[in-house]
Image 1: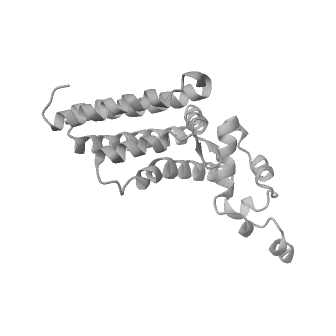
Image 2 (image 1 turned 90 degrees about the vertical axis):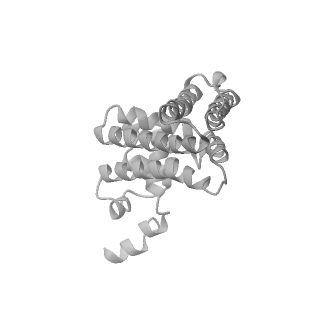
Image 3 (image 1 turned 60 degrees about the horizontal axis):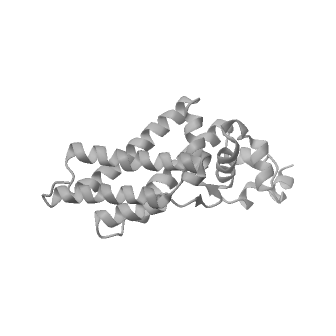
Length: 205
């Protein structure tokens, strides 16, 4: 029995480390949390169910790993990609453009964001993660806007404008894509960044 496991073509060691997580996120984005089942993921990634239990003790452990992965890749991962930019404005502009990309690997970004939030509406663990992620994203925006010159009250409002606009755009992409105009959103972001810089330069906008 042990020997058979060691030579199975679908043994856990033959899979990418995040294969189960990626497969779960793909299904989540397409069909929602109730469709994320071990059997469904195994079929998608072309293995039997056996290797799943060599990596995760149960489905809840996989769901936790999915949330952790989503949080890391779609928040800190994006922030890290723009860290080398030399100005706050350039970092924010590039960050927004990265967030606007339609796909993250094989996954539709807008559908994934919507699916995670729908999951949070029925699950306390997911809801807690969403609250933390929203706070982390907005705090990062506030920090960059502060470097541009926005005061405490103003930068909070401006950060929320950027973030709520992005989440709204994701929603429009899913349900009324004909109105999902990235240039319109980028124009709003440009106005927000200019307003923050105007405060630094002592201008009224």
